[in-house]
Image (tube, rainbow, N blue to C red; front, side, top):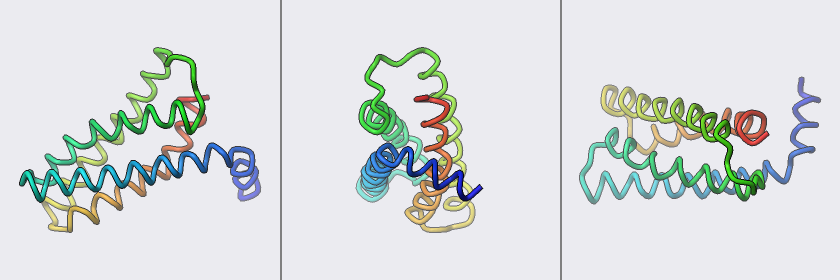
Length: 134
């Protein structure tokens, strides 16, 4: 299993590196927009996540499509539907995490968001590489 994983990483190291850079930039945009919405516009964190995720998910789709995975042809209906399915799951996961851990349990909204991003990132590369941009 570990050998297969290491071969996969070596084979797709350019895409994995670009995916990482895209992810880092998305996290920065995500956190900054969340802070802006909460601290400056005084929007509850769960509502701020609902708003900022619409922007971040579009950013991630286009950067991954054209740069990380170099998918330069126009998006097929299947590709868009698959991305929508994955991101709908991620969207509800993100909002649910914020609602449960911040609203109900009182954890810091930024820590909740970072933990959620780490979890989603762990499965998104595989979905992007082998299901959406295959």
